[in-house]
Amino acid sequence: MIVVLKQNAKKEQVNSIKQWLEKMGVSVHQIEGLHTTVLGLIGDTSVVDMDQISSNPAVESVKRIQEPYKNANRKFHPNDTVVDVCGHKIGGGHFQVIAGPCSVECEEQITEVAQKVKASGATLLRGGAFKPRTSPYAFQGLRAEGIELLLKAKAQTGMPIVTEIMSTDHLPLFKDVDVIQVGARNMQNFELLKELGKIDKPILLKRGLANTIEEFLMSAEYIMAGGNQNVILCERGIRTFETATRNTLDISAVPILKKLSHLPVVVDPSHASGLTWLVEPLSKAAIAAGADGLIIEVHNNPKMALSDGAQSLTPEMFDDVMQPIKRMVEFEGKILG
Ligand code: PEP
Ligand code: MN
Picture 1 (tube, rainbow, N blue to C red):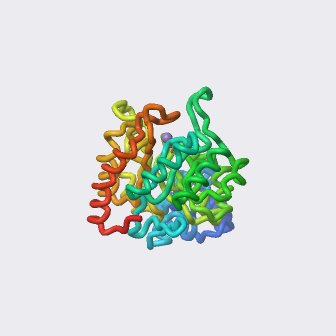
Picture 2: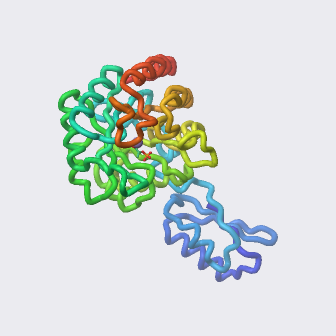
Picture 3: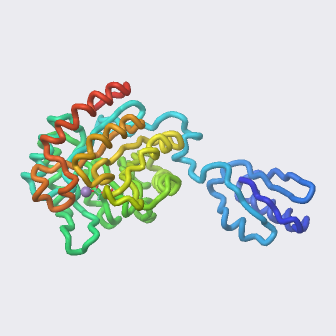
């Protein structure tokens, strides 16, 4: 971090800023220019508050050189993180396909979808029990019962389950869930992220609708700073001016996240597009861009789905989409499943 001091900064002011910065655990290198004094901060600057430094009357400007996240940063952890979900690895050359309905609706629905997506090559089962809906009048999910039904489908198929949490109050209900999803709308629910940092279950963290890549990685940092390193990032499309799709899949986020961070990255082509016919091309784009997995919505009867029917594939459509996915993952030299 570089701190540029005002031209009229007094010697005492400079010394007191230096001492104050050193108390934060960084060493300070002072550079005297002809007219300006510059302080170079060396060490772990992720704990240094830029705004606080800027508010000092002797400071002209502050510039960050190092990213503000440490645990999620590839610079401090060059090797890919591999998250292991009941023996299914994600990252470091391992690719998984997570599939299932948007919402768990009843036992027949979730078990039928689970069996079919498994037969097509999906390894993890998704299904929402607690649903973040825009309208309070829309189906809110089966809640605790939804998790029970997912566990039944897991017992029948052996597929680990992925489901979304919306409140720290519900955490005890998630004790047998294999991957806890943090949805786009909760990406910056910092109290929730802090609680998830205290457990060691894998967390599928979705990018917020209107969040930058840096904000996304800072949310991962919240979980990791608490001790939980099992974070899977999920690019699910962001809100733009475009209306042809539900969201805009930020495909460049995939290689950027992989460059900046060692965490595995999965892509959700269903929420990114909102349209079934776009799931295949976006899945292919995700694999080509270096993704470590996909999360795809599949429903046994999309027309009657209680949420996200328009973007849900039938099991037959999913089976078709899995064929090029398998070929492309193999072509990329990754291990599927
Ligand atoms: C979901 O996975 O069904 C969901 C609500 O996703 P997102 O948080 O990405 O909108
Ligand atoms: Mn959905």
